[in-house]
Length: 170
Image (cartoon, rainbow, N blue to C red):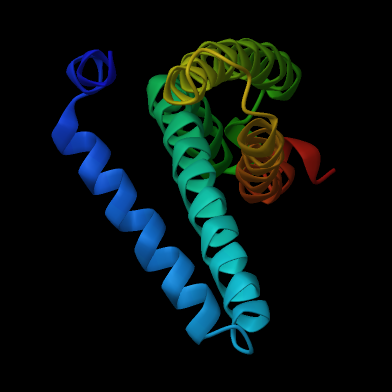
């Protein structure tokens, strides 16, 4: 009967497990006065790892979405800046450019956030698969925060570019 237990378990795995338990037990007794500080260091390292992974996933999602809309965004900004470079007496379509910029930015914004939504959904699936198909809230919350932060930073960079166009200076 006892041999059946060892046959069901992989004997090598059992020996490795027993060795690790023995090392931890001996180490816990030997280093008992240092364990309280070591636990905080290990916790800090784990949290830094979780933050670094979620940060990199959020950066990837935002930049991939931004690269997807960059051609349309660049075209809108280029057209507006080229129009602003024309002398004042030749500029006759300020209102047309305002509506073109407004509708173009709305279209690009919707396209960006839709692409970001799809990327975030894909990245959350990656986090879910890494956590045995359970929702890893400890990683999803920082991921959502970092994604929002990076999207806000993109908007903060683009806002002065659009606000300084000649059609909004009058």
